[in-house]
Length: 260
Ligand SMILES: NC(=O)c1ccc[n+]([C@@H]2O[C@H](COP(=O)([O-])OP(=O)(O)OC[C@H]3O[C@@H](n4cnc5c(N)ncnc54)[C@H](OP(=O)(O)O)[C@@H]3O)[C@@H](O)[C@H]2O)c1
Image (cartoon, rainbow, N blue to C red; front, top):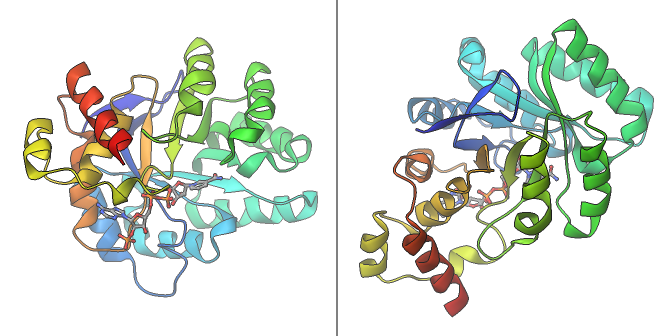
């Protein structure tokens, strides 16, 4: 698995990470998925209080392997007191949080100073913000320009390229890390490339091709993909294996997407 520096932070992150939205909101034991992910080099896990039981289920599944992982989680509430409770809960689960994000830019004025204080104390290693809607990229850009963030998390794939035009160039200019959310959403998995096309791309599955296309953008730190299905962490990790696609292969992925 290729690894990159998260912007100008001290953190080295894998090209493919694991999200926990939906897939970890469960009482079921997710240890097998976490163990498979770690074995494949996927050691960054992204969660949020918005994902129901996911933070707790991730902590349980990691157990004593916590130190082998990087935890990215979020604070997500308009209420300042509830935000403090969320932060206290995450820190009680993980000890320290490697990447603490403000989920969907909710109540930044209340949460950001707290995260900055925790970073000073060494309990948080990097601070960021996320948004899933392109319509909110103006707000995200404004916060990026404040230089108070180390990273951002946005949607980006060959069918969803607004971030490529405005957010990724700014992140590069400001030396910020970039996590990519929801790489396999938006109908991209409905595309059906021929086996010959996958062979030309040097991958076995279309999901691997999509992940490799995103991870091959040098401004991207980590592509987060989520699964509850055994075998898929290993499959998806191949999207982060070198060598990256050539420009011709990138064009080919885009052509498959454009063909519908
Ligand atoms: N606003 C925000 O901050 C925000 C918003 C959205 C997402 N996120 C983060 O980004 C993470 C990733 O986004 P996402 O959850 O939308 O992940 P995703 O990887 O884009 O989509 C997950 C879906 O793809 C399926 N899948 C995964 N690997 C596959 C494969 N190899 N072949 C076929 N299907 C596959 C999964 O099904 P199975 O489970 O059945 O395998 C699941 O239904 C989230 O989990 C979350 O941590 C953040």
